[in-house]
Length: 322
Image (cartoon, rainbow, N blue to C red):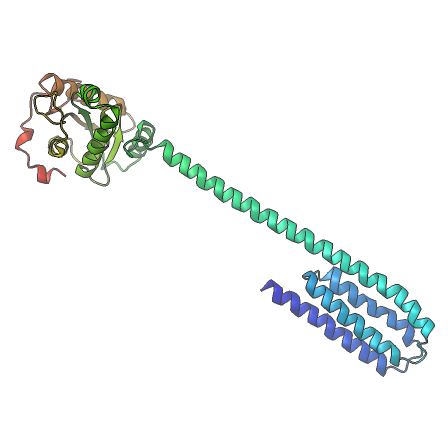
């Protein structure tokens, strides 16, 4: 670790000081007192050059200082005047180098904490942006995708491999929902929409894109491998069946419970085809289902932009609708 490396460096300087003092004590050079001042270099190396943690510098400097002045008493010619002159230089060096080291350590700590704070803020900001992005694509009432998410998913579908060249658009509308709201109140209306949304999500595959398309309208996008409508119609019928099985009371209707009308359209989906044209064809089929009495499924033609003759969708097995 960094702390162990710093401690090792401090120990090296301390050992070097001991060796230096031993060399001075073993020297017979008459100018050894002049060389003794070089011992102050160890203090500067220990505090300014290496710049370890302040506590390492502090205790290391005290050790070096103690070694030097334990040695000076054994040097020939080191009288009191020499010791005082030496102290007059070494004490300021000790204090100033420790102060410099303290300032360096404090500044390093400040920069580190500032960096950590910036990184933390950046991570929090990224997390909040991701959450805002997620929320902006989710309908708050039902938890399904919203229109913005639909546009994003449509763009992703256009980039899929050519083998997935067809898409089914299914639009589900809750029958007589305004009447339901007026009769039971808006809070019950919200519960009804949440229950219908859950039923639709249950009927669909995990890969299907389910979104709240309008007030009481829901839209499902499903990738298809064939332009034939059978699979999409079976899913639509399963959705109609699942909602009817909820048996949500709706006293003002003939069925006495909440039902849905469904419009379906299957067509090519590539860069030359606009999703709006498929949605429009499914919407036309939906209004044809409502015109015919609601609680039914109709198929719209992408090519002609009109609803096709009634398909025998009620013969499809709802269990195999997926």
